[in-house]
Image 1 (cartoon, rainbow, N blue to C red):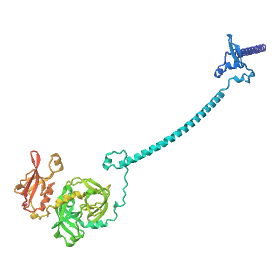
Image 2 (tube, rainbow, N blue to C red; image 1 turned 90 degrees about the horizontal axis):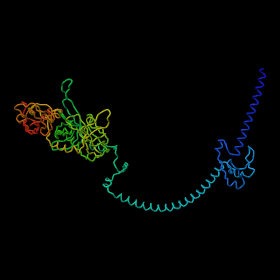
Image 3 (spheres, rainbow, N blue to C red; image 1 turned 180 degrees about the vertical axis):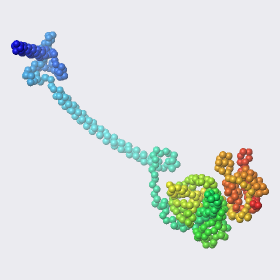
Length: 519
């Protein structure tokens, strides 16, 4: 029973498949026929194909026939035969069939290349004409440039005739280049042999020894001490040999000694001082000097420190470390320098000569020379520090010369024995810096007490006065006042300048004092 049913089913399936295949074939044939004859129901992929047919030309040549559509209108359609695999047009209408697109592009490219070649030939002709015109213009421009060059040359010649003042007035956008200095006939910057200069200048330089009293704060006692310096012989009078040095070299001295080039030593005396300028004049009496010494020494020649130039040679001579005269060399490092000092008696000096010639302790007061052997400066100080090398300073001789001339006119002071020493009769203290700033008090020796029946009492000096000058010497404290009195004998008349407070301000007064005795 089951086998019979299976056979029947197979027959039914075969008949159904046959019927479906036939129906599918019939529908496909109808579709193809309608597509060929009526041009309907076209596949979508055919829309992508571009077809162009010149209908009038093909109809005229018989390559197309007239057909009619469903509405009865005549429609031209190409006649072609062949199989599915071929495309040959036996009627001759193949010449009018649509050509592949790449063939059209090839023809277009060919036409474009032809046009480009034509344009290239035209461009070549135009370039040839342009070159001809350019050559003509170039010749014209060359003639014009020749004329311009002539005019420019004339302008340059006119410009070179301008004065230096005119050039300075004209601003320049470009920074000028450094001009190379030709040193054919000029003195070399570094002088290797200074023997001639030293030989000529050494006799005018002396060594100075200052014996003074020092104070030991630890043991609270005084003791004798020595300091070394240098000096320069600057003049000679009928009785004295005058020597310039630094004030700090002879400051607070008990005794001064000068040693000359022949190693002979003589006693020296202070003639005049200028503490604020760190200058002093000491004298040695001719009677204390031997004939041999007078034959060996010389008076220094002054140069012009105002004409110094940075970089020119400099030679320093002085009593370094108290070992005697020695020579060091260098150059002028800078001009118009400021050196600061811890000494209250000295002011900041902004006119100093800076040199890298070694200035050692003992060189103070010695000579700074140029290559001619002329004194251009008085060695004054140096900056001493482990990070500093070659920074010494000298007082320009042009600045020092008028001060030296003034100090030489003063009377030479010799210390008087204590039994003959004058007494002023005042007690007091120094005016400290804080008082000068806060109360606007002048610097000097403040008088706190005047002893009765003394020289000061008789001259009218009062308590509260500040003594600023004695006999023309600047006084900055009570110690300086007592020091100056060591050079005056009993009965000497001197002028004392003092500042007296009057109605809230200090007024200057000058009184004449006849010094008396301490008893």
